[in-house]
Length: 288
Image (cartoon, rainbow, N blue to C red; front, top):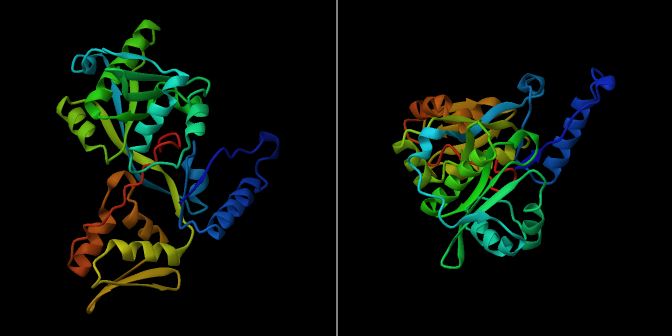
């Protein structure tokens, strides 16, 4: 999966197709590099819709307010991270199943990103959890990366709330959570934390053959998957259905978990797809 970002056209040169040309070139290079899919994040999704980009994937965002603070433990053992904590933070980061491959030296550099506040919890001389708030203009007030056992992390979350109170910040803290963090999601659900299942970003299929292979790996062996022109055909015995690229993307990565296409395909073929949808969430790339 390729990630495209930081694309902008100077106001004096807009309307000439420069962004479209740049994006098409980036897509071609990503495909040549072996990417099956691409993601990007845009302020105006309509600009990219005409170029084949569609909302896809799921992201959970929770607003941690004063009411939620009453359910959290004390910030015991929580302190600002130091350079000496880099190795421990890196080890906690690497415990995530889905992540960017990050070296220890890269971890050290990332902890020095301007505008980011990292807190850790230390217990019996060991760092057991961490959490990062702020990184770039779009992630101010957002806890976008964290690690450690969920119970340990709750102390860090409390520490960030206390720090915001000390700094006189009134806005709620936004916590990003991947679908795979079931323990934390269960806790937030039980405490009725206000949150939303949102869209991960805009995505596009770059290689139809590769996407068909990816789909084939997610389905039972008795379902035949093949590419026919600009569509992918799924067949089980005499039952078949064809999907264009947009429907295929909706099947693999439904926006905000909406499973309309999956339900349609399951009904047509008469079999549930337990391997779908996919749930991409890459820790370390702004935790998206």
